[in-house]
Image (cartoon, rainbow, N blue to C red; front, side, top):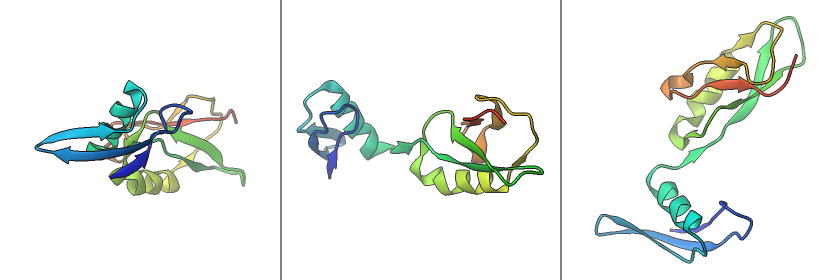
Length: 113
């Protein structure tokens, strides 16, 4: 699999393959690229950002996951965000949804309202 590493500004183009049960990364210029390539092949994860409804307001609350979630769980995370309505006041870092979609990752506020 060809991929571009996003671990640093260099953006190395890498080849990542699984050979004999081991992940082989070629083309990386630093150790972070090898870690990124291995993780991306075995268990790709992403930070998720979104908006949550606020009771009595038209303006939504911006939120994000507290850490990356598996790519396969992104739809369930976004669905949970869509179903949520928060009450004010909210501060940056407040947990809006704990352990969203069974991932063990929290959804946190990214703005004060």
